[in-house]
Amino acid sequence: MQTDQTPVAAPAVRPFDADAVRTRAEALKHLDGALMPILHDLQETYGYIDEAALPIIADVLNLTRAEVHGVVSFYHDFRRMPAGRHVVRLCRAEACQATGGEALAARAEQRLGIATGGTTADGRVTLEAVYCLGLCAVAPSAMVDGRLVGRLDEAAPDGLLADLAD
Image 1 (cartoon, rainbow, N blue to C red):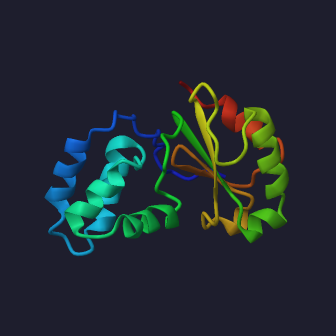
Image 2: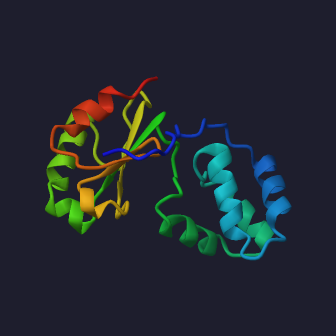
Image 3: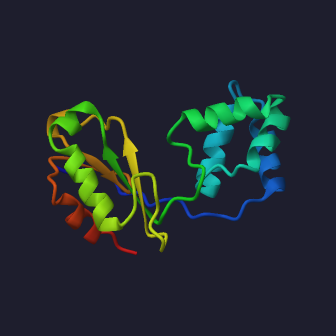
């Protein structure tokens, strides 16, 4: 099963720029709960949250570095490293585990030669675990470059990964 969502490739990674981070944070600091909008903006801009951005954000918002780090490390959607050109997210929640999710994940890791949470050496694919995509009725499921797919079987990674164009 596939949804009608338009596939979204991982954002292009820009080099970290401390001055640009400060400028972006200053522009958003007036918002209520500004930390989250700033982090989302940086994630969209750079493709990840660089460790060097944390003290800058903390300074702009008058927070401790630990407070900013706590938020970045708590939310799984904030990456600490650049993602690959393609992002494959495998659901690891209970419904997907009960319908073959473990074998699916093992096959994807074997096919890519990386563990879940890693990126291939050529930067082509990042493999991530998520804990519910809301497709429990068609489990196991995945998200490939923003496109949801369900009713997967152990061989599905072969086809999903072969379909990723560079």
